[in-house]
Length: 120
Image (cartoon, rainbow, N blue to C red):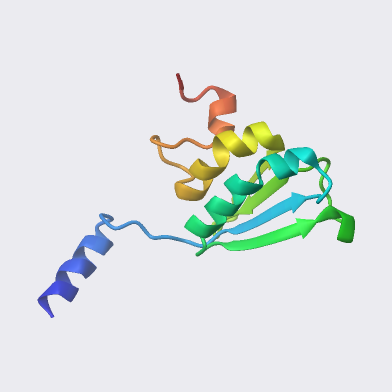
């Protein structure tokens, strides 16, 4: 009983972060060389962050509103949307976006693009 009370207290004061699920839509084409080059990265992150809702969407088998592949769209429970386009953005920012979308230790790619943080 004492452990439950301590855990509840620590959880309520924020020492244990709440892990919320996100929807992760990965748009790809089987014939896309860029998509194939990040296949292992996406697969590894899928296995590591399997508590998120992942959708692997082959653009040759449906009509999707994406301009290029590979593209990853992330929607959070608090209605934030992130879009990563191309291997450069996906390779550089996807892991951070999946871990913590708004911390100084791992700023979002949009914050980096706006120059809010200096990254060496």
